[in-house]
Length: 120
Image (cartoon, rainbow, N blue to C red; front, side, top):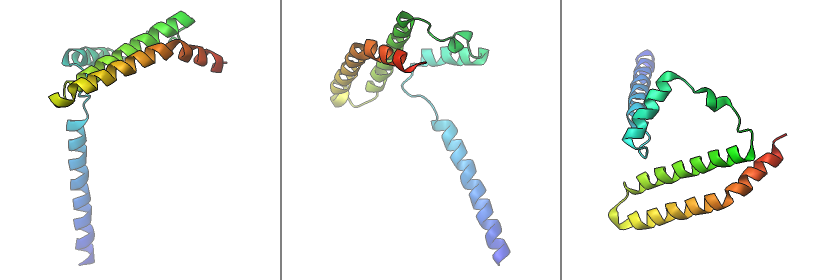
């Protein structure tokens, strides 16, 4: 009896693990990325990491430019996420996204300067 209980538990654990893995694969998507951008990302990933990912921004201006691009991308992702909320909440969501964007852009220079001070 004890042997069959252990086998049954093992079988259930395997089944649960398989179900969890299948569920993770179907839900592990970035729902806020535009489908066109997602296809482009998939093509780029298939080609491997670009060399530019491993080069540091040498100047303050380059660091600021990169940070501005990241803040802009975050705004776009937030806007895409806002499209998925109920219509009654959409305006508030978009206002919050714009406020976050403006706050981040206002703090960008300070953030870049702070990084320069902490980097040896």
